[in-house]
Length: 269
Image (cartoon, rainbow, N blue to C red; front, side, top):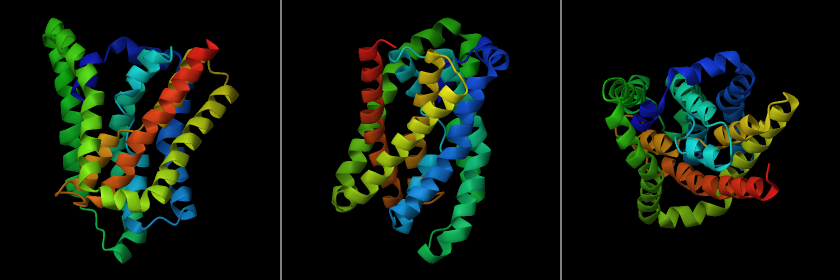
């Protein structure tokens, strides 16, 4: 999130104002449709409550910062990707407490899961908004340093996420292997449906090729680290098992989207 702040430019947001179609389609898919898809899949796959909550948590999370790198690899609109990641991060400061509060109120009591909304808001401000603002400040006052820091962090973010996933995988491998068929299939279906719907909406809206690729990647790539942080935080859910859908999601997300990038490159689109 700090690195995202380092890369934000005012002209990126101006582009969204002048060419809003792709921006609206991507945010609609990510903020509105994705939680409803996760809701349906959770019931379809009869997920246990703790995994259902984990699935909803990943669906409510903002776009992942690695989506900017994937957009670049796919020949997408990187400026649009950066702006979408930033805006989804800001919007989900409000939508995550609302949606997860509703999920907890409707099904959490029977599973013994509660949500301290105040703590969730504080943690989101600390882990999402504050680092972005610090990144913007560094870029504003120390632009050369910001460029050097970005070169390091942009390369480190993805390996850091994979390290986090590996640590959790090692800690909970028994539970993961016991549920990998159901939960793994469910999160894979979430990614494929999200990307497929994003592609369909983009074509219906007649969005250009580079922007369409970015929309597909943004809607299909959620911030798994954020979901893991909220699930395991002692101040929010404090539940290690709730992070398992996000762990499997992060693995399958990269498989699916790397395959998508490879197909794009092979077709030369």
